[in-house]
Length: 254
Ligand SMILES: C[S@@+](CC[C@H](N)C(=O)[O-])C[C@H]1O[C@@H](n2cnc3c(N)ncnc32)[C@H](O)[C@@H]1O
Image (tube, rainbow, N blue to C red):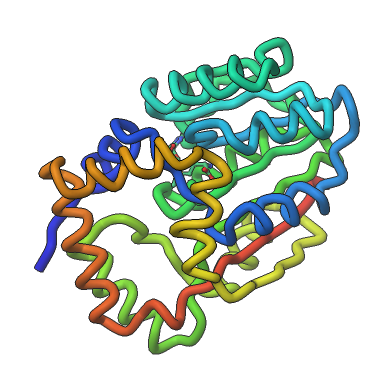
């Protein structure tokens, strides 16, 4: 049994400056591509992590980005990336909890949420996203998705002791959650995960070799990381891996 709380997990990610794009860079690009972001549009990147997606939207789509995250350390990583990519003028960094967003209603043309809802109370976070999107505003989410009812139950039992992703759920449950929050035009693209890409190739492209090696070192020296690694080994042994997909979801606020 491996017990690690959500806060411990997020804190370890923050210390390492490590965030994940389930589906890799290709998944992120597909998610944003379908949102059709136009220059000057105000876009929220909720749970921005180290800011890769925020910078991408500022650089390639010339969006006016608000990069929000619960953890101040993550925002510091995002700031460093924005400085390096010279897009600080187009990105505002905001400390924010998905459950109580510090924005007025109708603030955003679009919102991107990648690998964040799995850490949240999903109906509460979706109600907040609905509130801050303008009428006609578009939402794009990239969240781990379980295939099959049996795997879903096994996953729930597993995450009860390894509380990384208690909300990870099936495509039907995700789409029902978007509809229950009032979103319309809900669409999904659930893709197999290329684990080599997600765990090696995409991180090398988003953060470079030096960062990748430093995180690798941290994973053997940092006690919290060692705990996470034990959890990951237990996850591998559970056989659940083959039932996990990258779920891209799109919806609109009517
Ligand atoms: C797995 S990382 C993904 C980061 C980024 N979206 C990406 O794809 O690289 C999850 C991020 O969500 C943030 N997060 C978790 N719970 C949150 C909440 N309630 N409100 C805002 N951010 C949250 C974490 O601090 C972390 O940066």
